[in-house]
Length: 114
Image 1 (cartoon, rainbow, N blue to C red):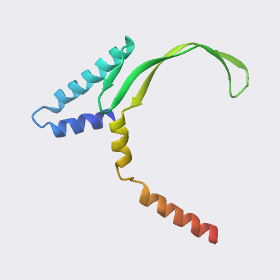
Image 2: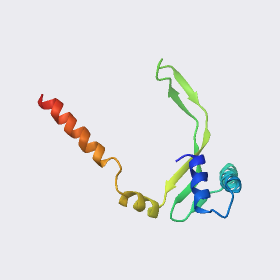
Image 3: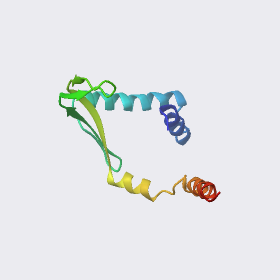
């Protein structure tokens, strides 16, 4: 799902609010989350998960193409930890690709026996 898809879904579920107002609400939520993370705050959404900023220390690495040593500066990185309830809901959901996998397995078996 994309941001515009999220806006469409929220607008569909709240017909008493215009699509333009729905877009403003979604953008406001994201802006508030970004500002909270920028200031070092942790965001916790019960049943969904939590966002926080992790600090990656400076380190020495290697350029994978040339093998030359490269200094990697310290940086702040957003990190998401999924909540228990979301994890369980996703795990309980039927898998959309089960039928596709079976067809792929049949095709692979047919090629292998040919």
